[in-house]
Length: 161
Ligand SMILES: [Zn+2]
Image 1 (tube, rainbow, N blue to C red):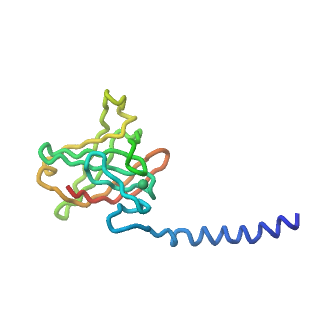
Image 2 (image 1 turned 90 degrees about the horizontal axis):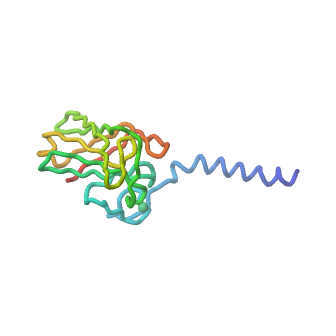
Image 3 (image 1 turned 135 degrees about the horizontal axis):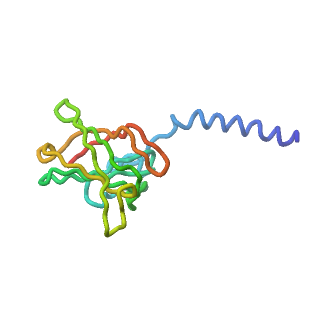
């Protein structure tokens, strides 16, 4: 028992230290061309859109703008942006910042008979707005998004094309 206590004490102490140090020590390592948090490897957007990391390498969102139709599609992807991740949300609210004003977009869940995706169980969301035809680049934010039992808050994004 004494042995265990003597071993556990420094162990618990270093564990406590680790917990204290971890947030500050979580530096991103990678080259300039890597997407943030990719751990040194590059993620490729499946539809050639803009990738937005969600959490620390947990998930990705791919933003695809159709400038002709004035449509924005968001796909929910896994940590390496390789597989689609279906979520239960009926919509995703994205607030775009355009010309100093907030422009909320409510992206509705899209059903897809080919993949079996339904509203309430899909990885694809869409919204249409006339200003999407003329505004190519804009920063924005998704206030809250639940994926796989985790709710992510304040997901900052920048649509580049
Ligand atoms: Zn990755």
